[in-house]
Length: 77
Image (cartoon, rainbow, N blue to C red):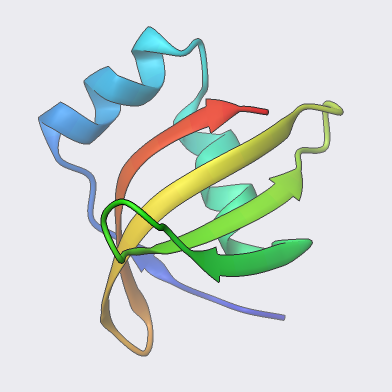
């Protein structure tokens, strides 16, 4: 089971709130993705997965180190 420390910026929290996504949902998908990839536009890692509430999210983030993640944005797909 993956364990990460998450560093949340005000900007990232606002971006996900604008998409009606919660911090818990983003952390859930990043910690337990169905799939990972790299964003074609930014080159940042992305996690794609279903939340426990059934929403399918794409989450963009920065990996600070092996256990520290800084979410950038997320949206429902």
